Length: 138
Image 1 (tube, one colour):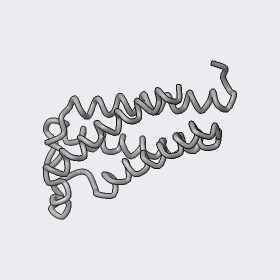
Image 2 (image 1 turned 30 degrees about the vertical axis):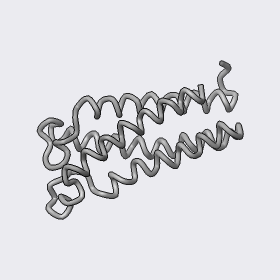
Image 3 (image 1 turned 135 degrees about the vertical axis):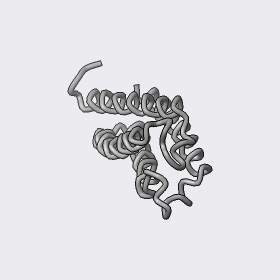
Image 4 (image 1 turned 90 degrees about the horizontal axis):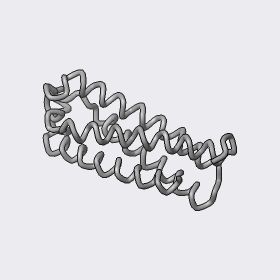
């Protein structure tokens, strides 16, 4: 189940990179000073940074079998998920398709795919970490 988790994580990352590209190419960084975007730069870049850190912990867990790394990956992923949910609610606050600024360039399908894949990854990390800890038997 650990490798399936990595695959879903990578799919989530690919869609996330696409969303970041769309936001940046739509002038997301240039619109910060004009307050046209609802996404602060710290939020936009902290979300993937935490996700990458969590993935690194997860890969470390897969190579070593260290349960602490599995739970550390989950803990860091909680932070990334909260930031992602924050961006999603800010995007929805603009009405999604009626969002302002660079958020208008984010396709609904890509946003939904990224969120669904992220949620799937989140659940898989939790379940796999719980099995690794011995709380549940497979």
